[in-house]
Image (cartoon, rainbow, N blue to C red; front, side):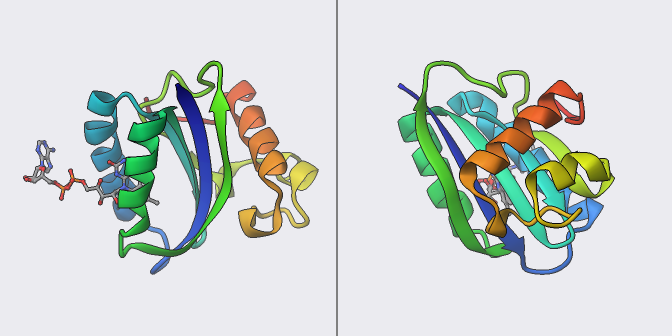
Length: 140
Ligand code: FAD
């Protein structure tokens, strides 16, 4: 049984490369053995993450991530059973949303900066699908 979970959160302090490097390193090290794939998007002080994998693995991982003091105000945007993975190529891909072109962001959000807290789960998912097709996701 595969599921896809998407949530948004706010970083405790502004997001630096060193912070995202550490989180991505932990994610890549830990997610492979439990069969979880996904991507981590970030901009200013906001994280938007997708986790895909077995229901138990994804649920347990989300519970662990939710207690991480490096972020707060987690909002679950979507949790659904899926037939196939969309982010199968990424143990934890990354997208710096500040580098995405304005038109792509404006297509789905009120402002040319991403605020997943004011977007629907469907809009966030559509934005992420566009990031895949435009090859905006780095890391594996
Ligand atoms: P760590 O403190 O990283 O390490 C624990 C043990 O592993 C220690 O014994 C240490 O010695 C050993 N170790 C450390 N580094 C290495 C290394 N390079 N090689 C071998 N052993 C090592 N975590 C995830 O797992 N997956 C995610 O997708 C994820 N997403 C996150 C998203 C956000 C927005 C945030 C804020 C955090 C996320 N995290 C994620 C981090 C998560 O909250 C935990 O901090 C993390 O999972 C803890 O990892 P750990 O148990 O390996 O502990």
